Length: 181
Image: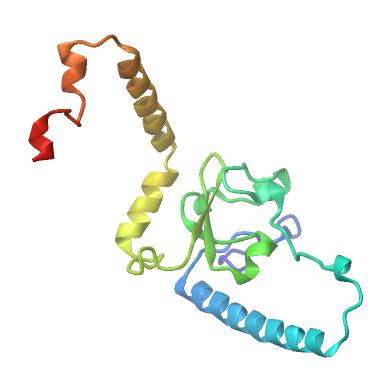
């Protein structure tokens, strides 16, 4: 049986990139963060003991994969393994750079990548909070971008229209002395 409950065959020997983001995932990320902090302290202590001769050999560490950035479509190698059952649900981050960073990913039906922080939003909303899940669902929905672009374009159209009582009534800020009292 595979991880998702179906039998594995020789044709379905694809690597598993996509796992649902659960509370257990969050616990595992926190454990990896703690282990990484311990290793970093040990490495810093070791570096402090060794004499440094050349400062140019500093390595800035790993970088995120450019083809797995926010807003990019899934790479072909991963898109072939992507099951539509995982579309629009939070997944564990599959970029190795984010292994120790609390993030989760949502891949849309069009296979676009959206990355979110798994820390508490506004110090109140965990990634599993229903309000936050609805906000993420709205943000990742395909029509959200269309609504934003339409709002921007309509605002531009109103701004280029000549002044008239109709356009003046759409302004929120009135320049009169009533607000200055």
